[in-house]
Every structure is written in C-alpha cells, then in structure tokens.
Length: 110
Image 1: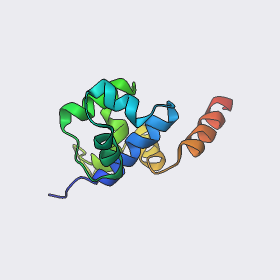
Image 2 (image 1 turned 180 degrees about the vertical axis):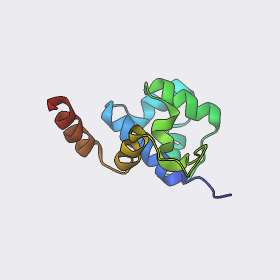
Image 3 (image 1 turned 90 degrees about the horizontal axis):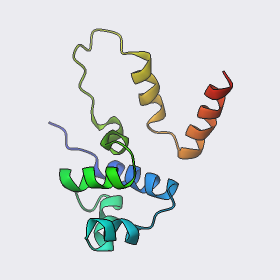
C-alpha cells in the first residue's frame, strides 16, 4: 500500500484557505488547536486525523475530496472507460486556482 502524500494534501488545504482569505490562526481557533499545528499540516510535517480533516473541510465549506485530490484512485473496474467528469477532475487536480478560474470562465461561455 502506498502512503498518502500529506505534503500535497496540506498544500490543497493551504490553497483553499488562501482562496477564502482565512488565516491559519483563524482555522486553529475554530479547531481549538495551536496555529503551528495548522502550519505543520499545510507543509506536510503533520498528518491530520480524519476528524480534523473533516472539521477543516466543514470550516472551509468543501468536501474532503478537495484536499485528497488524486490520492483516491480506486475504480470499480479499471477496464471500463472513466466517466468524463472523473477525467476532468483528474486533469484539473494539479492546476492552480487561477487556471481553474480561467477554465471555469471558458466553460461558462460555452
């Protein structure tokens, strides 16, 4: 079994936090943890528990999937073609927030 990439997960958390203009201190206060713990999660030096990960997602009004990105790779049948939505999700998972905004603008034009 391959370990999760906690550095990537932490970076996804940081990206969402910045999108919402939230500080690490604000998140830490809501979670009742030390702000350095949030910093350590965002840099991949700490592994958040499932409870903390879910609470962070709730605070940031998104799903845990947003943070896990491409870490979840199970497909019921890899021999079948992946739905277009999953292909799009995988293609976007590594893109920056700015690029995602540009792509969304293009989609809205269509």
